[in-house]
Image (cartoon, rainbow, N blue to C red; front, side):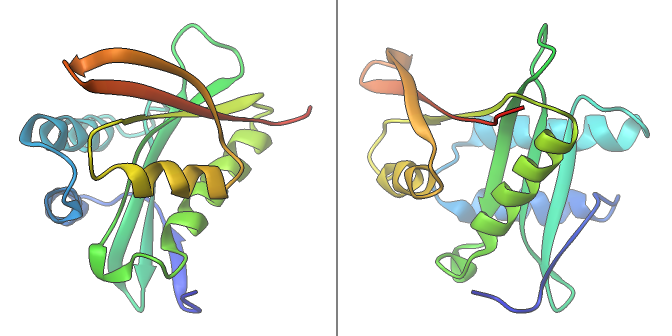
Length: 162
């Protein structure tokens, strides 16, 4: 685990950092990367908005990962983990865990009941599923052929006692 990891809020100079993280992650296609960047733009253009919350993970001042989460639409206590990306050079060193645990703490602080994440069943996402399961997320559902034929949407979640 990285002893020097710190978390901070989103800043305007993170546009390029996050775009680079999404591109280097190796599993986000161009459309997915564009959506991730759109959420950053939305948050930066609307100071004080609460739709998309961000945490940037830094190691000795260098951004090495980020998470984006928010309260699910039409819900009073179900939250969604929209994005998490960690620089491939830092994977396996605890950055992702720190980010997810931060999101969970923020959801608990807001008296949230659950945190839900979705991912793909495409080859290359086995590590993502294993990551969530290691953090005690359970598969809540699977929608066959959701993204494209042969690529299911896998929905994972974790419940928090109130």
